[in-house]
Every structure is written in C-alpha cells, then in structure tokens.
Image (spheres, rainbow, N blue to C red):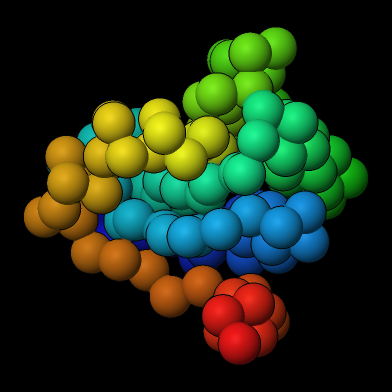
Length: 129
C-alpha cells in the first residue's frame, strides 16, 4: 500500500504553506504501510516558538480553505511540537530542539521519503545560498 493521490494533494498544500512561513527541513514520509489509518507524515522545523505556531497556523488555514477539516491539533500553545491531524495527513511542526530529540525520521526510517512540490524544494535550495 502507498500514499493515495488525495494524501499527496494534502501534502502539496501543507508543504507549500509551511514553506511560505519559513519552515526548515521539510520531510514527507509515506507511513501508509505501518499505519493503516494515516498515509503521510509531513515534518517541518521552526526557528522559534512563534515560528512553529505561525507555520502550523498557515498549514491549518490553507488546508481548511481547500476544504480539508482539521481532526485534531495538539501543542499549539507551547509552540515546541505542534501536531495537526487531517486524517490521511498528519503534520508535525517542531522547534529545532524537539526535532532532534524525538527524531521521527529515525523512528520511521523504513518508510519511503516522498518528493515535495518543486516550488518548495526550489525555495529550500535558494535558502541555502
């Protein structure tokens, strides 16, 4: 089983929204094999609590505008690790320290990494220059 087209559409909207608020280290994982109730995790890093909250808020706003309902949101107030559940897509926005500590990429290392929209990858490459 692999991530479905609808999940990939959600991913594209979420990744572009996160990128627009300056998210770093965007990584999308296809978790559909080990987790039958979720297709994709999007991981993103913010530089401060405020940035984490802004990234999470923009992702939620853009997906809601596109007609996708937020099922659950956790951690927004603290701004250290915000989890937003959209059913087929779960977005994790971390503060840098939490991203390193919890290391979800290591935990889910057997899951395939999904490509991000070209617009997002170009933006990330430009940030490195």
